[in-house]
Every structure is written in structure tokens, then in C-alpha cells.
Length: 88
Image (tube, rainbow, N blue to C red; front, side, top):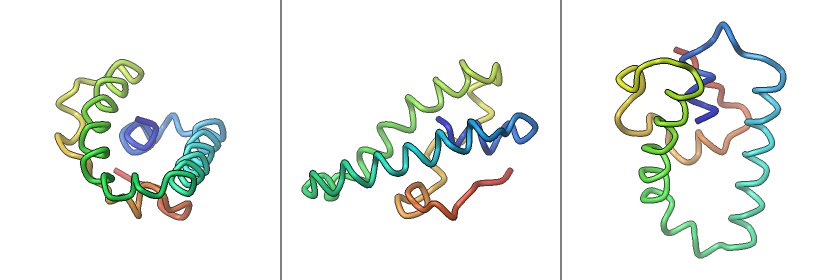
């Protein structure tokens, strides 16, 4: 949801948004380090999480759900890479 907001509301980007994304990336890395068997299910988990992320992003931004891509536009490596910041 945070990456969707980052991409589709560039005028609202802030240090808080950036830090939230960075924090979630650290938490994701730690969780996968502690549970390596989950790595086999990443594609399915991303697809499932994306539909919820779109709902949350639409709610948070006030933008229509049709604004956001129907499937996740980022690979796991992009989602977890601290150097990747999507632009619209």
C-alpha cells in the first residue's frame, strides 16, 4: 500500500512515508530471515497482498481503485530493495 501511495501520489511524498517504507522493508527482511521457508510462497503472497493494498491505497488516497494496477507491478526484489522508489 505504501509503495502504491508513493507512486500514485507523488505530491504527498514525505519523510514519514519514506521512513515507513524503509521500516517495512527491514521488517520483511527480518521476517524472511527468521522464516526462510516462506520464500517459496512469495509470488502467491505478493498477489494476495496486492489486492488488499489496492483497497487500502484507495481508502487512504481517495483515488478510485481503477487508478491502481490490477496486479502488483513490482517483483519481490524491487519491493524489498531499499534503492527502488517507484515513480509514476
